[in-house]
Length: 218
Image (cartoon, rainbow, N blue to C red; front, side, top):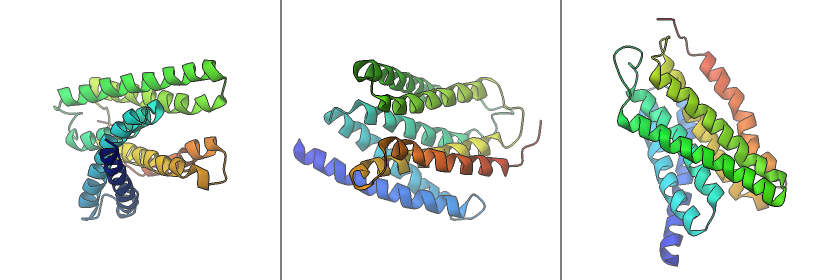
């Protein structure tokens, strides 16, 4: 078992390194270059491997929070990927069972994250519990917005591109956060800064990129 955990850890690290590199490259190349798509695919599959190995390792290391964070990050990846398959959602296309399955699993995970934060706070009165609470609340807000988009056809064009860009960049925030937190002992900063810092820096970039997408009313 220890050998399998060691192998899983190595695979997790390799996939994490690939996700950080190819994620940055995909952002630099952007959608209007021919290399963006293959680079994005490498990022997607790297994040998939990270999710699988991350869930496995968190279970055997009994780390509930990392288990929930794995779902938080991969949810964004899945939504970004599915956005490419739902380009005509505002016309005749309908969400599939896969889309609803993703939302249900994600919703349960984010509620679990919030409950975990509340229980952790009342147990130890440690304000560090605000971290899973923030991630869980933000994730649940994302699920509600996406469910609304699936139920009600978008009223503007290019919504799929906004969803793709926003969620891919959101997943990259998760990847960077995981890397920084794993190096916590080597970085002389408060834990809450390392947990929320990447989001504080990159969320404004997401807003700027989304404003660049020209969408028209239908």
